[in-house]
Length: 181
Image 1 (cartoon, helix red, strand yellow):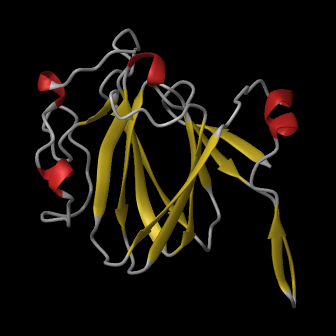
Image 2 (image 1 turned 135 degrees about the horizontal axis):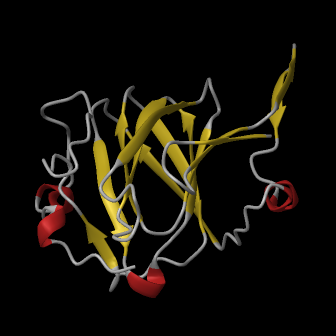
């Protein structure tokens, strides 16, 4: 398992080792022991799985505030997505900066997103399945989001009119959000 630092502190790309032959392939998608060996300590308590039928579906930018904040290990198991993490840690040198990467069933890459980040993804294909582990349980009282096209963050999604949920259409700008980590 290869752990790659991004330009934002504590945000990592994970590249699992994939073993393949004529039957298919095998990979270890998470090893707490291996992560601890490189100084990453996470205790994941919840697994989530989503399906998006249509290319151009955008989910996010979502986060949970306060003590309900979540670290996530995300991956795309079917299709492909542009996955984005935005640093919302106000005392960070990279506050409001974002990193994006393509996650797909082919490349099998994963994104390890610490607490204090907003997260979202855009489907690049039809029929996308996206899974992630979280180190804290979902708390509807702490659930927050930021509008996907907030000029203050300026994520380059590469799309002008994504398919959004009603919740995401009504999301506030970062400057209007209740961000508390």
